[in-house]
Length: 114
Image (cartoon, rainbow, N blue to C red; front, top):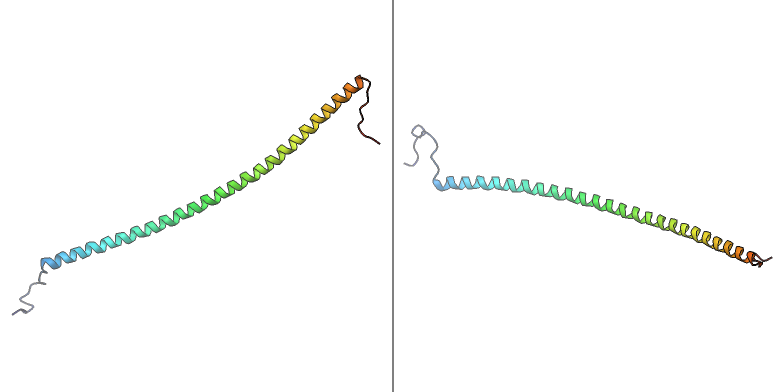
């Protein structure tokens, strides 16, 4: 008589120790899988965030490099302009000095021929 009447059974029969152990292990694995999924989600968000930061940094560095290059071009142009002006001034001073020396000796200095 495997089955007794419901009045004779006060409750459910207790599962064996193996079944109980299997159920506990299954629950542990379910919790572990949920944790793995949660960590994978966090990892994906972190990777996405870092890639955004890298793109922003790369764009910033690119803009800085372009601005620095443009500034160098302007500075180079300004330097050339100043050097030309200084050379022109130096040559004019030399010409005036040479003309003065020639005038002191009674010689002429030809500036422009007609």
